Image 1: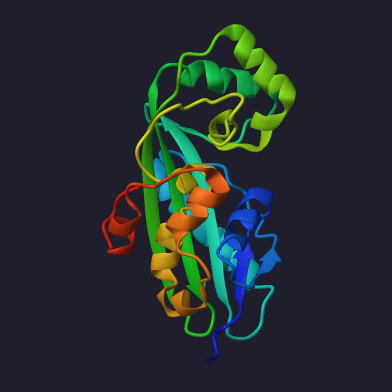
Image 2: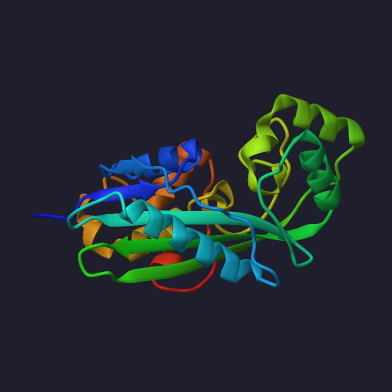
Length: 222
């Protein structure tokens, strides 16, 4: 069975790794754009716009019947969009701001079919509560370098730092690529998948997702 070739518009090594977990062959493109929020732009509108602009930018590098995947993830604290920190000081500021508080992680996911120009837009939002952090923990974590390329300055999968001990929702979303939502939208490729998203998250992230079936059934949860 023939399928249009698949490409991921992302510079993120983590997203590239996560997409590879599904066992689908794909190409990687840069997809670099200016990700600065527009004045007054709401977080959900922001991630969908940025993801779509990444896909369209990467699409200009391709010819033929490609399917492009692009995503953008931000942490949202009391309405403020927290992207990747500019430097160590900015990372420490974000962690101090999130410490002990509830916040959201929003990912905009775009599937762009170049042959017919159809764009599928999906939003995934997870609600989190970061544990209370000490000043020393924040300093040590920032010094490790791990938060500097992460939205909101933390990686949920970092077991040593363990920023969010408990939550319910899509862990893959918080890592940057909501796999169940992606598989749902790549419906024509399901026959090629070697594992379902639940098995992938268990094996790769150590997370037994409670919502994967509901997501695949079309429920807008994350």
